[in-house]
Length: 213
Ligand code: GRF
Image 1: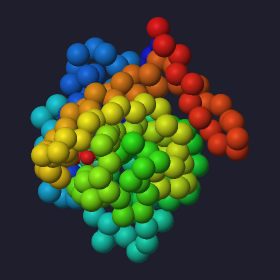
Image 2 (image 1 turned 180 degrees about the horizontal axis):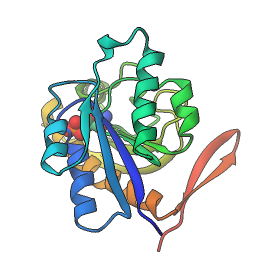
Image 3 (image 1 turned 30 degrees about the horizontal axis):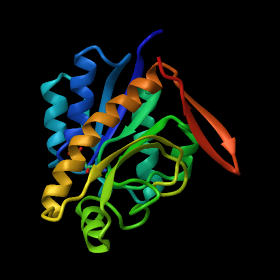
Image 4 (image 1 turned 45 degrees about the vertical axis):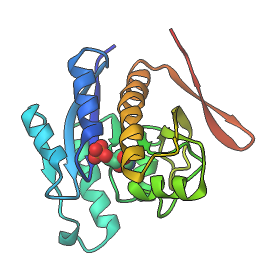
């Protein structure tokens, strides 16, 4: 099977991008990151890409008249590199419907909670962990999922649980969840690149069936 060309969108530190780079370098994923795009010039993830010889660029949203134009230029860059799988690794902008349609069930996002809890509009970064602590839930975790036209509503691929202890803070919870993100994102991408994620429609919703082994 030829290796899958992967495009990664980031906005920040890029530790999830790094986990993907490391997993590919370890030979665990039949894929190649051919492009990293950031909407944030200062994103350390751009440096991580540079250090690993991966084409990377900052695209300034303010240079485009609309969100649709911004999405369009990202689609163009992805097409130029023949990207087959898009990974959102801490990317904070919403993809427009055209983007999601063009890469239907070919966009994987990592979210720092157990979807459908603590997700959707306004739930990103440390806001998610604060909401967990404020609510008093005893477990949280991370979810790797396909992106559909909603926010954090696409078919779930993998989830992993993190226990919340009495002394946990937003900072400690973020660190615990991030560790789990760094495991399930590469695993979800590996499964995708090996064609092991099937999608089935049930009760008017698409769900994944993972072929193991
Ligand atoms: C992670 O917590 C991820 O769940 C969320 O944004 C953060 C990105 O972190 N989507 P990093 O840039 O990968 O370090």
